[in-house]
Image (cartoon, rainbow, N blue to C red; front, side):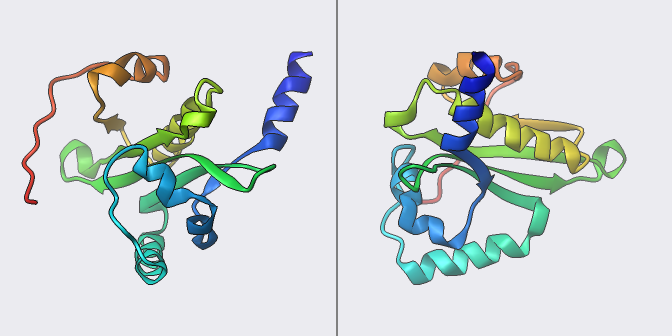
Length: 157
C-alpha cells in the first residue's frame, strides 16, 4: 500500500529545475510566502532567469509542481562557491526554501532540500550549508543538517 501512495505522490508532484514558464505557475507568489519580493515584470523575470541559467550547474533552482493544478508549490536554490581552501574545494549554499502554505506537511520541503543537497554533492562540494530561523532548525535537522556557529548579516537597503 505504501508503494502505491509513493507512486501517486510522484505522479501528483514533479520535482524539477525552474523553467521560464514557472512565473505563470505562481513561482513569484510562492517566494512572497518566504520574504519580500517586490514586483517583478515578465521582462525582469526573463532576464534574471537567463542570467541564472548561464551559470549552468553552479546555480540551480529546484521547484515542485503540483501536476494536477500546474502550480509551483515548493522551491529552493543552491549555488556553488568555488574556494581556494580545501584544495580549491567547493561549497554548496542552499537558499530560499519555501513550501506553499496549502502544501505543508507533505514532505515537499524535504524533497527540495534533498534535491539541492544531492546536486551540491554531485558537483563535488565538500559541504553544503544554509541559514535558517530558530523556528526551522528542527526541520533542517530532520534533513541531515546540524547547527554550527552563527549567522551574521549586514543589509545595504
